[in-house]
Length: 502
Ligand SMILES: [Ca+2]
Ligand SMILES: [Ca+2]
Ligand SMILES: [Ca+2]
Ligand SMILES: [Zn+2]
Image (cartoon, protein in one colour):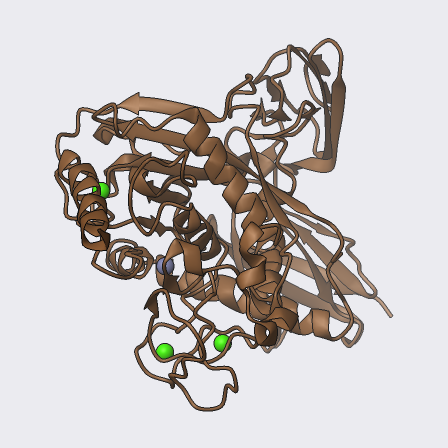
């Protein structure tokens, strides 16, 4: 009888797999491609590894500061807005809204330690178990500011399945769906992944347009809503991959030895991955009295046999959200409000010459505004109701810009002081004569490279290389007399006579 049941389970599993024309996941063990995907990114994107390491260092530095007393607001629950992009070829792959909502429920339960199977965490690991204070919500506003279900569905023309190598699922032009602004959303793509891969995540440091988590459709949500027979039908692939997205490494580190680590202090050191469903104490490395924490979401155990994030992992993820994913903290994607913001259409317009045209563009968040009201100190026009106005500034100075947006029932104002710097037309040096400091102010479109203050005998007394627009030279140590200021700029070399008075 038992053999028959097993055979039946095997056949159902086989049917699901053959429908997808794919190999089932390896006989045991999560098949997470996050590490392999990071290796691909290292090869494709020269800046990736540096950014990843910088972000890791930022977290470690912030964690050290927290230990020195500058604690994060530990009681604040962070909400991460999620958009699901279902990219399907067959109706089987086009999993239901219910399955996606079930996935969200699993994530919220696991991250808040509200999962029903916390009872399976052994007593000796319970003191380490954490409510991560991170929760997820389904986006209610899309990047255009319009209402959304938080779910996109795309029937794909891609005939074979998707893989982490090509990453096609993340691009509309390649048969997938473009990411929504990853500074405001966690993008979760659902598709048929090849080679039995269950999921992969971009770790912090990946570029915005590929940022997010990809899940194989068979691993989304929890049975019975998840209708696929496997050891990975309780939605824990999602928990594991979102853990990676928030910077967590596999609990065994990145090598199959005891010398490497996951950089989390309260997870036991572990040699390699655990698969299936272990029981009792399994010790792969010396020095941890209770052995491997194979119940951890960042191991490879079966979905039914994982049930814990640790406090160390929780602070790591919290801190990562406070540093390199801080856009998520201020995202309005699950709300019902709007927030004014704006920028230069051309980023170098922060510094212009008198008479130049400066173009602005609204960069509001949340609900799409219906009206814009701009106020330009020192500008012509002084006000505008356009989405992206052009303004001329006749006089040198530093000017504020203010934008009030409204959707009829709500409004929001952003003010930026000294946002526009209209420079002088010619290089000016003042005061002359000077007693303590000389100020050198350069016009837009000219870049001063080096300044030299030279005595009348030709001796260089001060030399400065500079990137600054406004420079102050200290002449308090100079005797009364006449000096030569030699200014080398992108316009050539210019010489001014400067008197110092005592
Ligand atoms: Ca697949
Ligand atoms: Ca550890
Ligand atoms: Ca290891
Ligand atoms: Zn993984």
